Length: 323
Image (cartoon, rainbow, N blue to C red; front, side, top):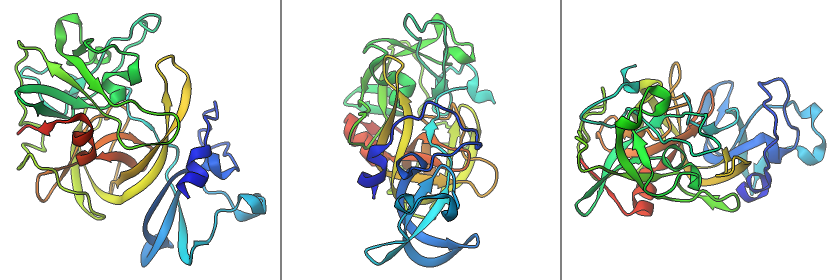
């Protein structure tokens, strides 16, 4: 189902704001996952394949060829409205300058010409290490903009959107995992090495506190999680899906829009309010029971947040979490 619907998506070039919705499944379906079927707002306990869609459209409005299947190989399906997934990368105390620098706060890069009239900010997720070197962990689109930002470029805390200046450089971009426009991606992640003069506190994510272990824990449906982000600060949620394939709108290094498909992602929802908003990209997702990391936030809609499995992130970058 992911190959059938997600791989065919192209950017629409319009912002619908809920007033216009595409009829074609390749444009309306933004994710495919597994879980239990909902009936009248309640879980039924019946296993199903989930279609996450920008907007639910009545069957009578759709041509027969554009209807989503009611079952797949005898397994029922369910349609869940999430809205369109977008990077959490734009504009609390977490926006302020912090020394020592610490996770859960504002970070960002400086746009090169001709985009130097813009500023941005995202979230410092965690401190990670390779041998004796220590790095900021965040998203590719928060630290590198998928190659627009050169390796060795300065990273600031706070981000320039939040009042950071050239004097606030704390790290240098070291590595990022490229986001592909074709095929499926697993992670949106990057690291930036701290300057020798940067004081660092790896322990204190505001309200989350210190991790209990440097070893991550696998996400499970129903797991209660928490995070501290640059925009929404401390929030709590629950894991809704652990193996969703989703489409997320991006820009390449030249500013051209494209749709990137991600396989095997975590989806988190909040019991009340919101779990994340723009600017929370890069936040570390922590299991509230074990106090171990489980995900890295990178995208979301008004109701659902999308995260990489943290184990995939650490393996891709060749780093470990620092307590």
